[in-house]
Image (tube, rainbow, N blue to C red; front, side, top):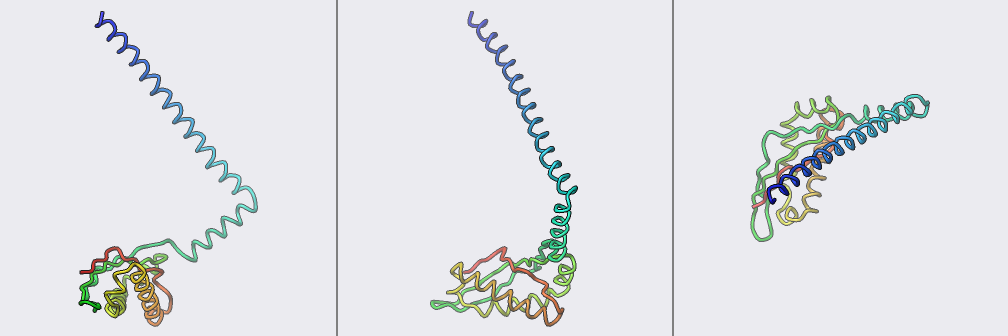
Length: 172
């Protein structure tokens, strides 16, 4: 008798599993269809009206002016000593540059030695007490960006780097 109950439970649970799977597939198909209609019905509406085309043209022109965001990793981390109130510290900073558009990426890659020199000059002028606080690191990043943009403006004639990103920061 116990074997008969196990058999019945097993047969019923198999049917339940199949029913749950079929229901999940149906729900997934319905959601996919709704998402398709939602996405492509909005695109057709904006393409057919004059307001939609002017909005899409302005969005494209803004994107063309700014360009896509590209990241230029610098080949070596910056390693330098900074003075502190208690003792001198050694700092290692890994940097990537945010540039907009392929043209600025090529310019940044071409001027890596100038970029490294400018950043190292700014970094090594800081002190350990400022770098130990997050606001001090942010101030250093902003100062380095301003100095770098000024130097590149003198050499290239345009602003190449939009932002400096610290991808690694170690202070001993």
